Length: 76
Image (cartoon, rainbow, N blue to C red; front, side, top):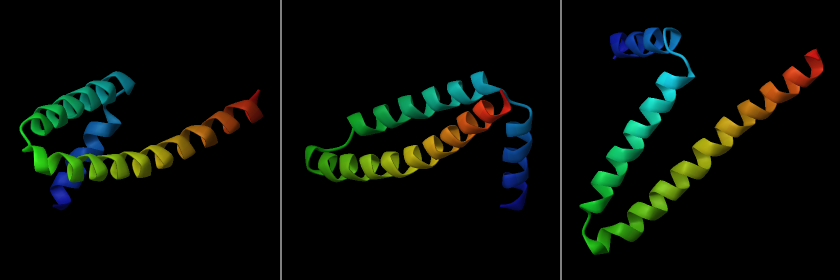
């Protein structure tokens, strides 16, 4: 597991925003494909789980963006 984290850190260090955007599009598309194969009775719990994970991760990401914007404003 330690080597896997090291690989992730190296990938992140050598990537720019375009690489991360492509990664997100790839993962989003994979999620859509998997979701389209779920049986009807499993779709509601999957949507609730996905919505919860989205809300939690989005709030963390936006907190970081807001802090960066504040930092940029204080520099100018």
